[in-house]
Image (cartoon, rainbow, N blue to C red; front, side):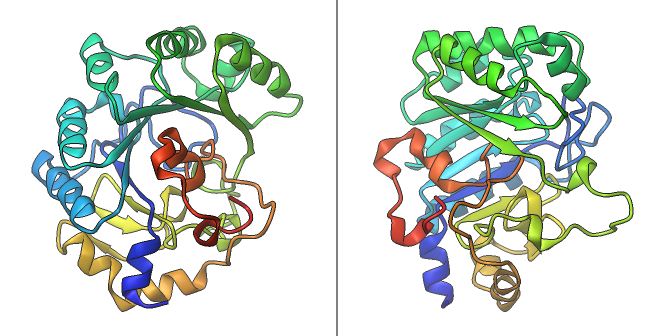
Amino acid sequence: MSTTTALRTILSVELEITGKCNTRCTHCCTESSPEAPAGAMTRDDWHQAIADIAELGIPAVQFIGGEPTLSPHLPQFIDQALALGLNVEVYSNFVHIRPKLWNAMDRKGVCLATSYYSDHADEHEQITKGRGSHARTRANIVEAVRRGIPLRAGVVQVLDEQRVEQAEAELRALGVERFRIDRMRKVGRAAAPAEATPSVGELCGRCCRHRVTVSPDGAVSGCILSRFLPAGNVRQQRLGEILSSERWAELTATIPLPRAGDCPPDDSSDCNPANTTACNPAYFAPASILGASA
């Protein structure tokens, strides 16, 4: 695959705009927490990254973390992305949404995504390790639906006998039309203790080919699950240089191709561009790019 073709097939870039999070989910692929550092990327660094995404012709950007709503600059990043014609998704745990953030997200071109684990508060909070997180997440799902903001949700099966089907039924009852049940992947906190480096077998195959991630420190990889395969850093190089490099091509070649029917990763389909960009029908991707599993 040539570098020009590679850039043309990338559908979305995840920007981990902070490493901090207000929960400590047991399966977190980035090991974020309230104590985690925000990251070395400055506001100007993120503005440059967003500008580069638009300049490269990549159609969508996703703001994640950590917990992206903890970044005081999120409204400015959304403004810039929309002004540049990018499709925007904010992937939040919905634990705390400030009124100003609702105003920033309740705009044409912005969609939301969240994770929901159970219809029972105690089970949901056993996974998030955040007291009261279930009630607040549920309330903000209701608010997003009330506002008519496009929303997708994922239910990640983390516990044995988890009330996954009941969580799905509750999401339907709340008015959420797009959701998916995912399995947990062995990366981050969910990684096997004896394994120093995760296996590429835990990846869905879309890393590097259709998806790019920039970490809170500026490291560029194929997705948040493949952070152990960095290709460069946007604090040292422009994003286009990294995505056109031999290193990027080499990393792409090490990742198995997507398999038909393969289960998406444990970040609630976050790594699947078919799910992310589908928030806006204008960006439905052709099957020839996504493959049968999309």
